[in-house]
Image 1 (cartoon, helix red, strand yellow):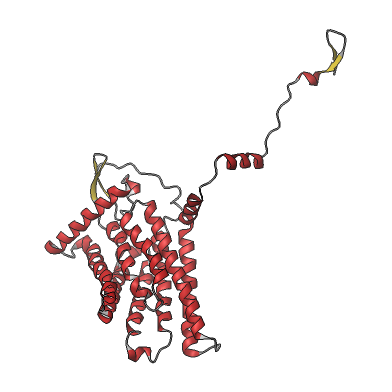
Image 2: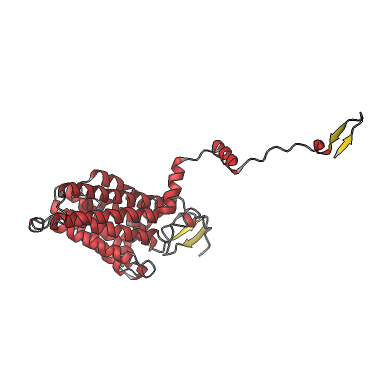
Length: 334
């Protein structure tokens, strides 16, 4: 529509409307946001592993287990007449990748829970995977595995402590998740040592009683499981291996008998597979067995991989999708 102005000139009504700036597209907004707030690569990796730790751990351990099973079968039955030495190297590499994946996912899970001691145990799996030989990989893992088992000990203790002036009792379902109860990393470390002191005292006064039977048993076995590889390195090779394998298997018997397997049934198969790994690891150190069975290390690592996959499913399964959204729970008075 044309309208005359004061000078008799005509203009379109539309020209009186203010010109609106162009609306940025979604892609433009995304580019602006990316430019202004670049993402921290470490946070991206942390978030990805936190949200997918079950899948990462399971995939790595199952693949490592299968490659080691194939190497064992080929070494003894010559199904495809392949180079067994090369197969042993390849399968050991994937077993070490599985060990590293187990350690990284477990360490990040404990980091998200402000639980420092088992975090150090899981993190220790990585240097062990790098520096230990394939033959002694299961043996050397006794040290970090013994340490990270304190996660299960703390979870089952039913810890009573004080947070922000209130006395609370940590649930036996998630008592290892200090962050959930408003407990910081170093406060959790202090709390852990207090609990370990209590366990030692209880082992003298009333050992293996009631609901503390499982924590007491795992605590004792974990200490000897850690000592085994140390004794092996000090020269007591056979005795050190026997100690690591025996007390490691004792913990795994506990996983099979543990009442929590009713809620997390994967603990049972994990314990059974780790018992198989411990038995084979000890037998392969006997000349009679080793001279008759080839690639027995690969059989032990096969069981270890299967156990690692089931353990990850039991340990991470419920929390894997919740980790990113976990918020601190305010403690309530007991």
